[in-house]
Image (cartoon, rainbow, N blue to C red; front, side, top):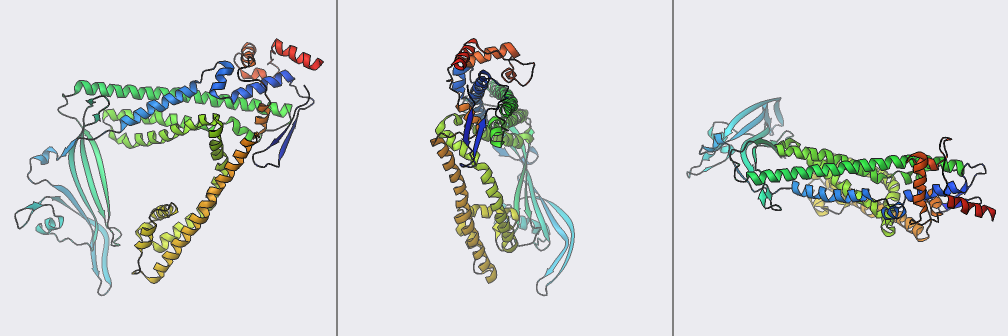
Length: 534
């Protein structure tokens, strides 16, 4: 065979070309080059083509789809339906009037005189505790009225020096998990529910923030004999399902790590081959062909699923403090698992155009977002500083960012405008209009459309390359010159000879070390002898 020369248009620029010529002192004879080409082509084959070439079953594909099925079933069982009841603890159940704990926190001194604009404030805090019960009204009825309760107990309620109010109470609940799929019920969860409602008046800005905190403590159920056999079976089945999920994820983790290791090893060998045979050094786009970020994402999802499932199994022991951790890990893993399926869409030409568009557009999109974020942060800080005292959506930096992000997506525009009405200072009202109109015009009509155009331009480039059948990298062009179909017996022959000469190592087809040699099939030797003689 004569010298090989490839002229390849790069993905970054259609005008830039790479000319690859075989070196005169290349240590690779034509049969070895063909074997290398077949090996690289096999590496980038689809699972079906690999089965045709070497009868290698697509175990990773089978494991990934099996993992999606059982993980989805596991998550479906995690979401239960509560049909239980709630009541006061035993210490209160016998009382006619139930009570809650009321905690009032005041500044030690907080006298404010608006008439002459003076105040006397002691920032030290004092706490007052009450057991809040129902109060009897004049008509003989009873109801819960905190202000009336404090008045009847000789305590004058005032907001001037109020710092915060905490109202806490306890309930017992039985959480029955309906398992309609198995027509049975699992063991009920007996819980002690400690709830605290906090009314925060620390800022004294006329707005009292309210937040709720609930702690769940497991209790032992005293009567659980109704569905003992079924519930034990249900728990055992759930444990078996979780163990299957962990086992499937472990298999997926091992296979993906093995593929990553083999890809990195092949990358190093290919770099040396192209450098010695073509005097060509790999560029970033060539390296990224061998580094599959899909495998990295699948590995992360497997690790998160294994850890999250372990936390989920602890919930069977009534360790509810791990519930949030388990759901967060499993939720993130779910996203990554389903996104990992996109890897197999790369093997279909029409779907691969979309996948390649996302991959190729990512660097440009990130650069664009960095520039756009500068404007976004500027508007966020400006809105917080100017409109914060007058607009609840700009009260903090976090809420300001959330409000602006909603505006970019066309949400709550009228409400955002209408919160500040003409009763506000004219300067603030005018500024709010200029501010909001400027932000919406800049980000919706300019930034958002420019963002879309970046992706569309990349899509057109990728589609044009596919239409003209233009390889994207030097490695692609080298592989495309392989004339051996996937069902060619040469692929199996290469494997058999490599097993003989180097014990399953792929190094035998790459003569980088003197200790490795290659056995060229006899039919290939005759073929190349006839070619050279001719």
